[in-house]
Amino acid sequence: MALGVAAAAYGAHGLEKVVADPHLVEVWGTGARLHLFHGLGLLVLGRMAAPPKATAPLLVLGILLFSGSLYTMALTNLRWLGAITPLGGGSFIVGWALLARHGPGDAANGAS
Image (tube, rainbow, N blue to C red; front, side, top):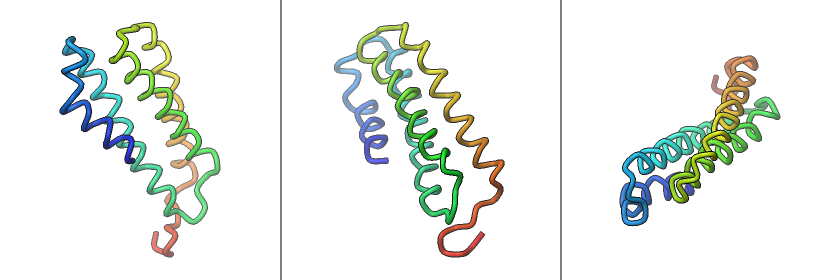
């Protein structure tokens, strides 16, 4: 979560000094937004009594591939990195699908 917040803050307050293309600033913002959403998902998983074991690694992999490729593309303008981004999106989808299949999880405090 801290890295997602830092990425969002940098995108809002410093990135335009390094990246002139407004589209690439938007690309960074998309990466930061999804980074934060899935970081929150990881926090929720941490409160579950027994989430599917593959869900957290898939969300982390998704953050690395999806957000990481967008951050790198925004900084370097290497557009081919956009081909990696859907792999991260797929990782997000599979992770959330596993969690949905698991059903409404039991929170660590016993509430559901």
